[in-house]
Length: 564
Image (cartoon, rainbow, N blue to C red; front, top):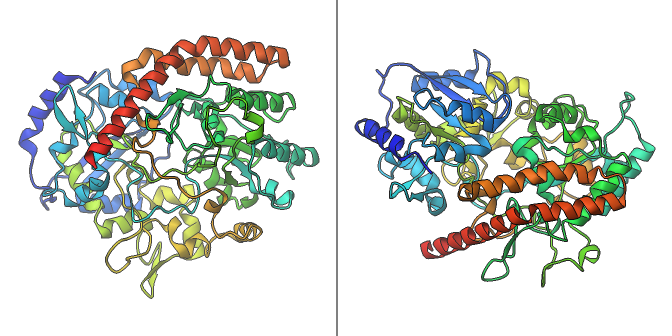
């Protein structure tokens, strides 16, 4: 439940502050506190983009990056509602902030007349972004999505979400094969390690890592839906081919067992290290950054720091390719739901990242200043600055095209360079222009340098160019199928499960507790016994979650269809 009283009090307090959103020249300089719900690096004191933000908006920031458990940290911060950070990015637990009444309703400040840039940004997906608060009986928007509101058709130069990843050197060593199934994937890793047990420095390779730390346990529990051919719906499998959208938790279904049986077999062979089940996220990133981990299931954004570190060290052969693995249908045909066909669909249609990004807390004294900043940052000139940097320093314009040198493009993934030359934390959490530039002098080009055609292949390092040439590709997105049509409900992982908080918590905790032990079983008999016990233990919470998610999906479909 939202803290209705707190919200009403804050709405009354801020009602007098609804003023035009141009920043007056005589406005006093302010410093905003900013909590960023993920680990990060402090920008340098002379960061050139933050200096421009200060000059333009009179705003400085004091950043606090996540250190430790996200939910515990948010719980501590919410104990004092009068001393919340001004800008509050709750990461993957943003619903905790919303339910606690910690964020203001941005619709008190955002509308077509006063904030035309913001309104145009959210308008194509406003039926998903703007929701109805039953407690207050009003439309609400607590967070403007930080990703997924791309302009123009969807750009898929690489897989930005979930996939099975494998180091490029493994594919190169094997003669650049096409890998489609789970068995092919692990067979290749086994063969590579058999011939190459260590890296050139004598450090043993790790075949496959499984991140289990906190909310990132999706690396352990989400793969089954993708092996079944569906994009990311969180912890449920939805049959979108049927009118009533049958929905079930997949982790306790017979078709989940083959995946964990495979992990069990790979663990017994030494391909999976026991340490993987107790690693922190920071330890996981550090391990990937060494280039010794050959494969994992993850989402591209989740290990971006490791990728950037490898690129900075020019260890391109140790960076990863995203593969859309699926079950071999013959191996699971006896346990598939009736009529189910397996076809790889890892990339979904374009979707706003609902309730992800920075919200303005009820403690903030300057919400109108933040809204004015976001409004201006969505203008073409500021969108170029936040994405491309400063013309003449970070990029050039040649014959009407936005261009970068190889060095400039390499800088965009250099973590040390970005500390002084990018406003990464603000850019990452704020509403932003993405996709194609639709009008003006740069129409047809891309807001993001990494999507600009000249950069995608032309400024790619020589290793990656040669690697792709063996497959006849010019982008890494070609390793998976094109995006599937987005379901009317969006993606089910975005559904708020607070109404079944206890059941959902039990559902997740049982997986975290039992699955590592199942994978580390001593023998086949113990594996089967532990699996059966797991399925029996999780059945009550899985049933509650399946029924709840199905009901919510049907509501979302009905609302979407009525809005159309």
